[in-house]
Length: 249
Length: 228
Image 1 (cartoon, helix red, strand yellow):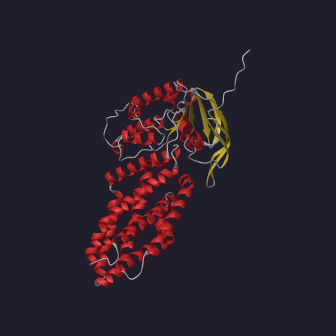
Image 2 (tube, rainbow over the protein chains, first blue to last red):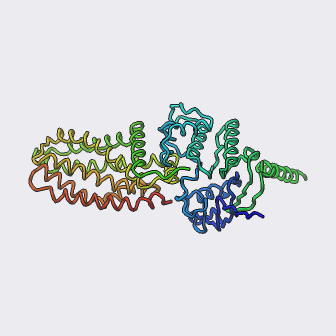
Image 3 (cartoon, helix red, strand yellow):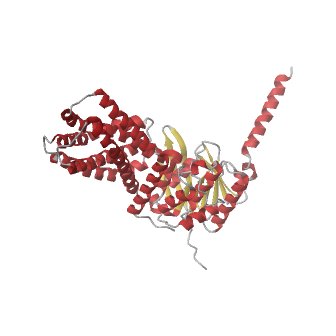
């Protein structure tokens, strides 16, 4: 018989509450997330997905509760081991992609131009591009932002809406890159409204609603792939029904 | 996996980045120059001093012009970090917060020094100035005074970065706390220009002020950077 050592969660949150003034964005979230998996966070606008990601990444302090990342209560102690891509690109508009990446990788103690160029190539862009980031399309900025988040080779990755304004082909490239990283052992959290893009690669979906974690399911169930469409259909059915009732004498 | 970088390496990198951004955008230097130039020209039209009177008022005029122009630059410094939420990328990294503060302060010191180099000849021409005291003392006062303005200014600009009306907040917080330094820089400059009194006391006061506020700002910068 062999002893199995229990696997330490990559991220562990305990009764996490986060208030913005009187508004509770997170209402007591408790969960453990195993390493080496790709989690997709789903939920409507205002459900608390981005807030949860920012709390776990250390950008926001929880109003109550505890967060443990990569076995540490101190997020700064593991700062070199995780990457974050936010809603905004977190890039300087006046600098080129390679200049941005050289600067941000230096913050992680990396002074290697080749590594920065590789990161840019990985997201499907040309490192020789001399244009400043401010002149890029939104989709290109998103991809450079992903390159910035992965340039230091993190073992944990938080991505907040990585596919917004990205064309379908590029989004699929990004998705397969994330799958490769997951296969190599990186734990990945993706907040997205485009669940269908992540469906082929997601290990687990985490559903939030009004600041609460309401479901965790393996993969992404088909009912969650197009929730809005289903709602719209239901609402439309209701309208037609009521309309016909009113129209009748 | 990577290791946490050293403070001086990050300071150098961040400073080079700030200088590059300023060189490309010229946001801070243009607005500072324009503002300071306006002050000099308007004051020169408003007064018609003799050479003796000029020496007495020039210290005050010069430092007031520089102080107001500095506030313009200080606001720009952190505004650029708010665009695209770039500051978050720094907060997420293992880079020491103090490195960001030192680089910003040194960057502002360079911008304000450039402004002074351009403004002082204009002051000399407009106000017909000639220093009675030694020029090395003027240089010492300029260096210490500029540091006093930018070290506090950079800190308080970071403190007011997330407030809704930060352009108003910064002078409201900065000016009262800069009064001892402002008094010392004006009196030291006037003493050197007129040769009436020794400026040594004021120079020492400026040095102590710089030392105290640099230390305090360095110690308090991390919570300021991570404030929500």
